[in-house]
Length: 465
View 1 (cartoon, rainbow, N blue to C red):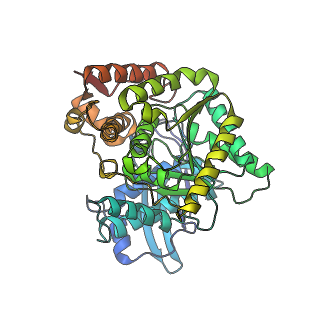
View 2 (cartoon, helix red, strand yellow):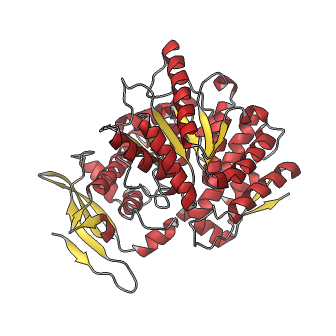
View 3 (cartoon, rainbow, N blue to C red):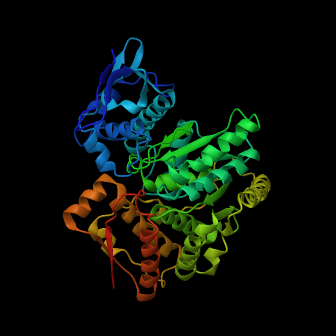
């Protein structure tokens, strides 16, 4: 039975109903069901509820995960095992996920992916004892198995997956440009992987989708990779036809670089800078310097200053070798696509010569400091060592952690609450690096890259000497 609850002055319209998962899981053990129902700190109910609500609330213009949870404070999801298989009981779910009382199929697929990944990670990664999550190889193996379980790794296909990074809070011009780049990529039969949210994560997928239709390419891939802390702020956009929820931001970032055959960076804010620093830090590791990975920074003409400031910061903090790992192309979607195609061809030849898999970059070395989860507490942020005297890949790792903390303070529920209770995070760095960091962050604020347009931004950080 489906019950539609009309909107009131204090909350939007909601729907209460029972649905079946869409193809990801058919049955669960009694123990798995109990863990999904368990509301204690040891259970999975809160995690399932938060991720499910994010998926059901997709399309709502907000990047405040706490606001989503407060708006739908009476939302609940329960897993039921019945004779006909697994069912999900939803109470007071966002009405936008339904049409005529029936859940939109794409949203049902995303909801099922959430359930699949939460159950797998809990059983096989965190408690199964199969993976050493304190070792580099163990973490990379865990990332591989999560992706394989989700059906993300397609053996036998030649390289064509382009990872696109960029902000959710971008201008219309930047969004349209990202769509144009996606269109040019799609015309060349390239598939798209993003963080699955709005803005520069949606634009390339939408453009590629149109191009794939023109080319009569019916099996186009629009892969979204998220994690529980960010999914409410960047809920899956409707183009995503493959979704995977990694356990944390570090495994999400490793998943991106392991499956990517090329990486494009569109304009963004601190989250995009975190991704850039992660990527360059990994590529600068001595073991990776010979690996071909095409990396392009691109945006419309009005975004040239954004990339100029990012490039200046990278050259100062990480050096000219870091800058040599990417190419900046402004206001030319076709040139971007052609450069990507050439880079993918070079990568394909390299992997053939070295008997390396096309679907997962096993040769890439990801150091442990880029893999271990960073919890951005006030103490951890203040203790980060930010100095150009560090080896370049270690400085990149610490800068990545600093930007990860700012992301948490901007959009993640726990980070927002911590800032409200204890005030802004404090970062310490040597004078020259601090000046460049200050210039970059101020530019992000001035360009409204910290929050969605129209939102009032209060900095969640302060810079100390």
